[in-house]
Length: 536
Image 1: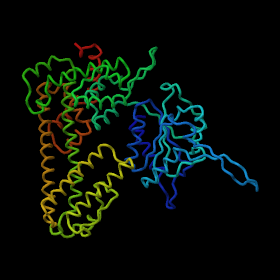
Image 2 (image 1 turned 90 degrees about the horizontal axis):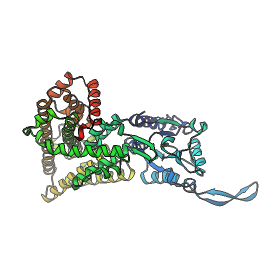
Image 3 (image 1 turned 60 degrees about the horizontal axis):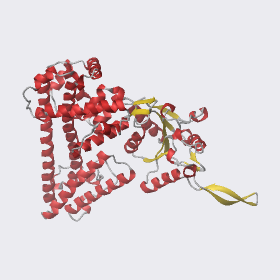
Image 4 (image 1 turned 30 degrees about the vertical axis):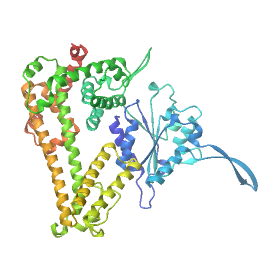
């Protein structure tokens, strides 16, 4: 199965394992809670999804790569303990607590989370001295003499033998005690993820055509040659930063991440062309409604991969705006939930549930740090300070517990920044009454809302100009299929189009048959690249 389905299956497993009956016991007894084993190629996201699962399920995560451990750190160090057996004093070998088990208890103590995931990576690549310990771990859920706490689910990951010479095969006795989930690389799923986390558009458009280079691992006389999804994602982040620094990403830089010479060279050539097309076609001008003279004529004569690159540039620029719209919308929704707690009672309709609203917690997600009700504070300004401090404490707790993704943390920081500026303005202007504070809060919120509306309108205008350009350059031809398909599959474009009713988008959706034509066009582009047309 692909990594998206594997993630969903692990989440379902966690939900099943942590479900309790009316007596407070787990419905599936811990002895029957089989460890989950993810088995698949390196770099496809097995480790990464564990962080996502932990955050989404709101449970703890303790992760170890077992190849970094010795037998002593895994099961503990021996020491002599005196015991009485049958009225005789005996010296017995005991073991200190396993570093891994101790880390779980530390996590429980630090965060208060009694349930979580113990993730062990590269579990089938352990040393000979540690191999029996790993078998015991999977079969009995113990490290040495120390049992994994109840409520903590074991998930392990490994690579098949063809990817690692040091892999050890598990026997049937062990395999019959685990829940095996085989995982395969799937570009469609990764592309969906990539659009959500903003993988560089040059990488996405290149792999659209050269999917054979998405996850490519070969053994040759020169050693292992490979390109992995992890390599492409890490390269994407480097390209993004290099662009900000004005530095060049050439073949040598690409090879540092994509250690397959043919794939690295091919992508480096494509990236050079991608930058050239971005300069030549001036996408920002196109989205502003200004198309340079001669552009339509050039595209008419251009090979398909050049036209595909131009469409990718347009989609990437549009999706960048759609992403900003989504993030601003999330920020506004969070602010609205917080600011409405400051609304004076005199402006509340009768029976609107103000008391219930005041008793809710600070966070828009229903976090863990309530700020109390307005009546408990000496002034509205002090209450606003309490809301701000409560959200700061909530962010700190979630960061320390590993429950915040980078994107969610940025949302917290943005909202906190606005709250702190609001509080500073309220104090500087000596606003003391509920009505005065509410007036300032409303003013700041209106400013944020106006900024959102302006951005939304710019993105809508850019989308309309993009359709103008597509119609002028390609009419209703094959290229429009790729463009509208890109809008259909983009995470942020789909969200934007739920809010903005673009008539031409819906018209082309009805008119064009996507699936069959899309495959044909991708095959055509791949054939074009193979013949070297993009490099001439």
